[in-house]
Length: 424
Image (cartoon, rainbow, N blue to C red; front, side, top):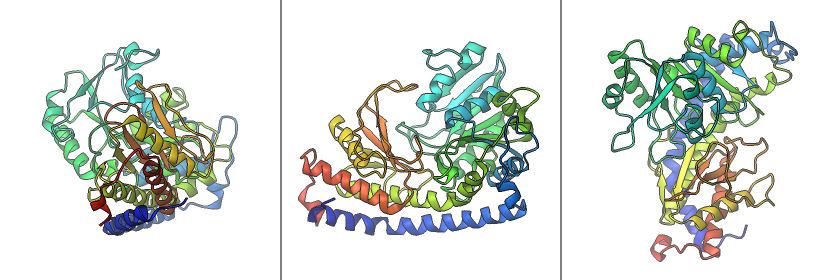
């Protein structure tokens, strides 16, 4: 990459702006690393657990059982189900919700769920097998004027047959801020005061290890996420997790597997070494991604763009949005990120329809693991205001290189012009 003097100046300014945030990220990563070390030692993780390679039904897999216990401790819950058989975060979340809901129950989402989940819960009627087909109703509580779930507003939307309230920690492709653990704690506390019987579910995708606590520590009854995002540490090739109260995880496990099998089965093949090691690496890898997000925000702010969160904003997940206000700019930026990828750099992504999304989506993902968004990706639906969502990054230096290349490309191709005062 040939970087012009003007872009070098913007990059240096961005690094100076991001430096205080880097220190905060490193402090969080260190605290989480120490916490994981203590948990691994508490459960006496050993080579016997890691070298397990069960097959068939997978019964009596002590490595799998110990990993479930470690995940439960990490996420502040009673139990966990961690399996490579989950194909995505949406799969794990759907198993959790289908596991605890029954025909006639009502699911209340605080704000619209992520695009792919709107299909699963029946808010969009284009597919078969949705919750609506099973007689489960889903509705959405509006967010407040700042884009956060308002506890009082959510409570006012509860119905007599509401069984689960779902909170999405990350903003996804939406125009709203992500949720901090402190805010989750306030919302959950208010709901439990109002309706002690309510089950609070948290979609934890993209948020793991961004803070020193997890939703289980804030009182969530059930949480779920993907192993090709934060907790897989960039090396787990597939899978997901569900964690929460023992009875709820057991119900979810019956949906994941079958009634009567639940937590007792599931061959792990040779996946345990990467699942143990990936989890232990996760605080560091998430820290690298968060620092990359900070730099991305600072760089594009220097170039005059709106970013969400801002470079001075609080980080509660690994997702960084940049608003391009123009379809061609957004698409070209994502293509430039692909050009700066270690895998498939020669491929040019183009907007196209994708299952579960209402709009065409462009996805730049030159990743070692298909769809891994703890690795550097840049994507988004093609709809105004044309925001690209940059997430992940196994190393901060790769993110720095890739997004700088993206900015340089936009300038070189005269898709943007940075005012002279930005270089001062």
